[in-house]
Image (cartoon, rainbow, N blue to C red; front, side, top):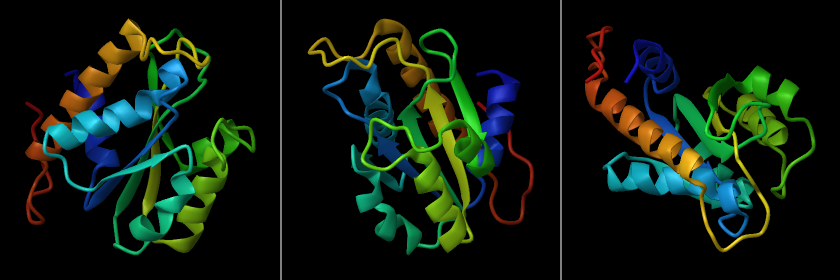
Length: 172
């Protein structure tokens, strides 16, 4: 894991963190967030919620549990090659993903609701899809490789996170 990814994840996952997996597994790489959520859960990461195509349904549960950070996991168009990823904060989400979405509610609206109704920091780990066409072939190889790498990095970073009294952490 690179130091840059580790530092970014350390900031994103500071404090009590919830992960909200978003996506449609019937649309090839649009299921990337759901697969990432599944791998995080298998790695023993706590507080993974599955919103699928209607992430607003899990927002009340997430919002009421007092998380310091809420991280959306989703396939998003970032104008890069398939499998590239970005870490975005609430303001970046709102500016990059206005009302257009493959979900019932856009990422911008979700981020704004969470930002405006909680004390939580809002983040997106967005993965560039190769295709979001209806497909039975599942996740593309490049996107799946990114998902696996991110799941390992997140799990390792959370394992290495400090106790409340120790502000430094070391990535594995």
